[in-house]
Length: 89
Image (cartoon, rainbow, N blue to C red; front, top):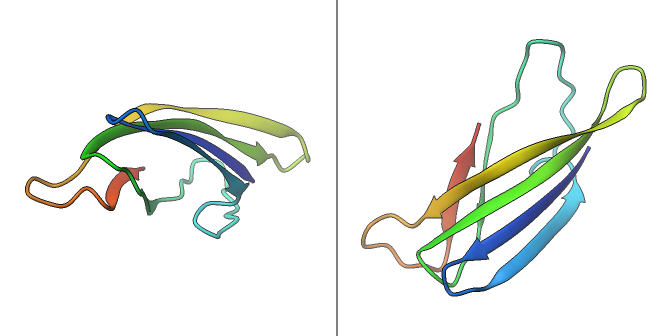
C-alpha cells in the first residue's frame, strides 16, 4: 500500500506527502470491510485542503489506484493554525 497527498493551505503553501501504508499500518481488507483512521497535517493558515490517492494490491497481486477527492481542512474556531487535523473515513 502506498499513499500520495497534495496538501494546500490558504497562504498558498503546497506540500506533497508520499509513503508506505496508512499511519504506519498496512491493513488487509476483506470484501465489504473498511479501515478507519485519523491523521493530521501542519498548515501555516487556518484553512486548506488535501487530495490524493492510495495504491493497493488485491488478493491476486494486481495493483490498483483509488483517488481521494479534494476535502477541506479547517482549524477549530479560536485555535492556532499550527496543527490542523482532518478526518477521512
